[in-house]
Length: 364
Image (cartoon, rainbow, N blue to C red; front, side, top):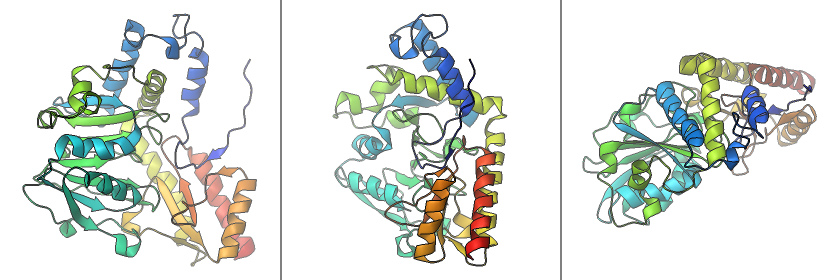
């Protein structure tokens, strides 16, 4: 029996919205996965039924992001936060330096973890402006003999996003947790890309790592087995039991992205959604003010303030009453934030933009 379920306007920063089609398919297959008589969560990760799910997810990601043949795709656990430690543990020796470009809270956390293993330094920082912009490429200062250069491609808390990635002669590492699959990316610029799944790729619990094979070969050897990238690359991410249901969901999200036209169509939709909200901000005559500078604005996280503290509280309260979920800004910044990841429909953004206009009309 098909039931009409009321769906929230989900602007949560993560875990975030998933495509309704994917949720419905998972619901249909939940008890009996493709004739096995078991849920996908009950399948052995060594079985051919699960192996097909696992490998299809890898193939779909490779297709959508045009990942070259000399890269490994890994499905790990521990979130992007574990990668903050795992990367320097593998690639930063005690006597080496690594450049970190600081553009927000998550890059700061990655930088902090790297200090435990080697000599990281600030290759650039926009902290003096409360992370309202991405550094210009000519602001980057790094050394030719660095172990690597690290950046965070999208900053969920501050609402900024890299529009162009640097071309550098040292290994480039990117935390793309909050904008992976949102637009085309030249993977070949990076030695390693990592991303928690819970923004654009699927549910929380899976971390995707895309890493060049020859970069893995340069990794430190004397570290715990489970923290070596080579362990997972050599075993198709099946050295131990992976988060099988999360990988299944990730694969279905990738299938959804392919079904709507692939990465080009996804990017087009994201630009259209973001424009709806930024246009309201820009045309509000100061009633709404965006946190990010215009050339650094994120298409994933729209951050803004409402004129006056009491009015902002009223805005958030009324937004909640109208069914807009997750629009309160991060506690470290305040204000408002609409996270409009891939699976957030245009209609939700349109409804929120109309709410913003009406709120200004009544309270402006």
